[in-house]
Image (cartoon, rainbow, N blue to C red; front, side, top):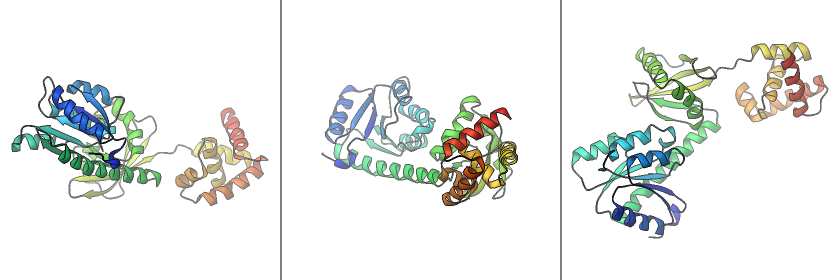
Length: 301
């Protein structure tokens, strides 16, 4: 059962049967995986607050909180959107299979567990999850803060940057974002139309892009830059051009040339050319000194 590809994979096994856990854990550890054990749903939720496993094996029938409810609760955590959850059950009837899939599971295996079959299924779902995470990370790197929601405004998937920016809105007003999105989408906005989210710590807008498969609404999140006053002050004080003052302000905010280029929709090389003029006009030699001058003057202004 040695499977090098699964080395260092973290698996959370949620099952109230000790013998079952022991058998599964032995097989997974032999395959080079790290196993986290939860004997009930509430323990799984506690573990999920601090650790996001690569994959979850979930017993369907448990006391207090069954596997279906535990799965739904785990999937409410944005960190678990790409985490595959495979149900383990002695119940193979259609009703329980459908319940598992509807609650957020991706697959199921019947007990008694066949270790070889289980590992094969896990490999497939782990590969799919890694591809999904890589795609979202690539979109973030390219500055494409994308996410998708259903008609009710519930997020289906999102890039990491979107999760980071929207989580404050969910924490402070759990239903406000979903209700706003659902009401807005109910009016069938056209591509390019935007919705303002003014309840987040930093104002953002959501741009409607398209509908995917007739059921998922693809959206882009934009941060509203409230910089016009500050750039105007810098422009007047140091006799800068509009673009030079923009670059100086973002330098003062700690942004790299690449990040500034993405914000201003120019190349890093163009940003560097503007910086050369900024250094000359401020009579400084580097970006640290330029940032210090800008911050000091803005604080006084």
